[in-house]
Length: 216
Image 1 (cartoon, helix red, strand yellow):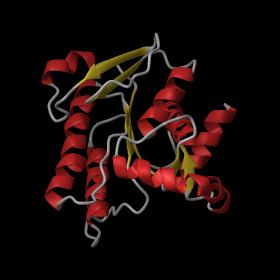
Image 2 (cartoon, helix red, strand yellow; image 1 turned 30 degrees about the horizontal axis):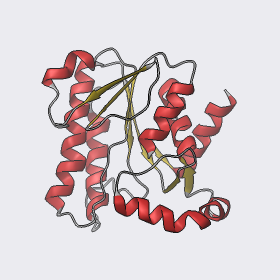
Image 3 (cartoon, rainbow, N blue to C red; image 1 turned 120 degrees about the horizontal axis):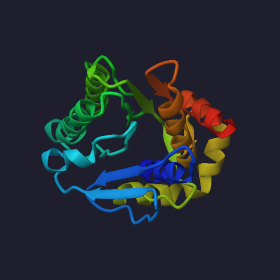
Image 4 (cartoon, helix red, strand yellow; image 1 turned 30 degrees about the vertical axis):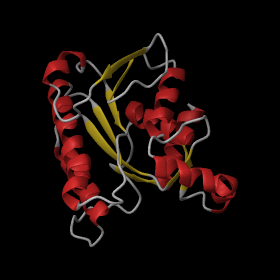
């Protein structure tokens, strides 16, 4: 859902000249600005490197739930997959800003008891060490889709369908913990253009960055 949200904001933004999506399937979106690469193997990029060069920012929105996964499986699909892409991009685009969608509760110490939080923390730390112009870790809490974005995970879609009647109430009651897909997209664009005062952004930081993008 986050990827769909930020893609929408990129295509609407006059400052964005070109967008490349890279994933296992096409987005289904059409725009003169948009190019797409369908890449079944998200661990290896040698054959498409020439198409990945020349970009100013990467919004890395891939992610999986840890439910039902072993630590080894989750680490492969979270840490190994992300770093494979990021290492390639940092080599091809050293002036790039890299934005990683992590999650509220991520464990930067990598030593806590919660498996997913440790691995997210390990991924964040590794990204911050790569030679990008800048790297930012976004840690949203609940994300509300407002422009038709849909998760590709069945369990997530069912959860959102059940919670849909109370999501507006949650936004009002817990504004520091709930964001919309539009806020996420606007915040990511703002940080790509202007940077942020810190590298790890919690939900309230993301909301403030979205406001800045809206008012600019």
